Length: 147
Image (cartoon, rainbow, N blue to C red):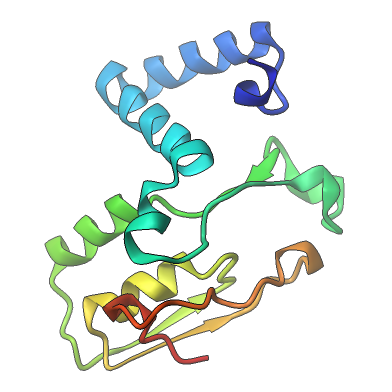
């Protein structure tokens, strides 16, 4: 149970949950919780494309100054399913170039390449703990990233 709560105590986890439900509504909060559980434990997105972009890093374990973090407690990748759906919905021209600034684990760049941008590239994070090159792939369409 403690691992599921991350840095929250049971009381602060309930407070956070109430805050989210009030701000986003029950359905969106439930969807977000499903994503978090999938990304932290099931890793369906990564398994589908045979990549490693899941996981979270506690920001207290990074070189970021605590004064710059505000209420932020951890870094985690973007929701891959939602970004894929978003890119399809906005229907950007494929001949564009895509730059992922602060790529983290590289998930956004991988999805941009899979979307079909002419070129997708990434720029590393400024926190040394997030300096993780975009993941190696097995040659699936999402592996078309170019550094």
